[in-house]
Amino acid sequence: MDKITITVPEAMTAYVKSRLAEEQYGNVSEFFRDLVRRDQERLKQAVAELRAPIDRAEAGGISDEDFSQAIAEARREAGLD
Image (cartoon, rainbow, N blue to C red; front, side, top):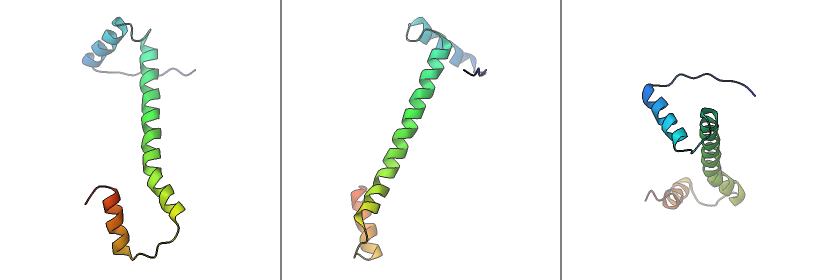
């Protein structure tokens, strides 16, 4: 396992210590590992949300609509109209 040293403002240090005092985490490393895991999950979710319409479009095949019709439909689906 690698070791990383970080510097944070006093307010953040106080916050981390308060989380430890609440016994939410056993130590500072657990707290930061949890933050990284949550960030990884958030990124994975964001990529999946961006990928979904691309997958639908690829599965839909070629459309007979002209470009303006396709844009109008995409705007409706996205809730922009």
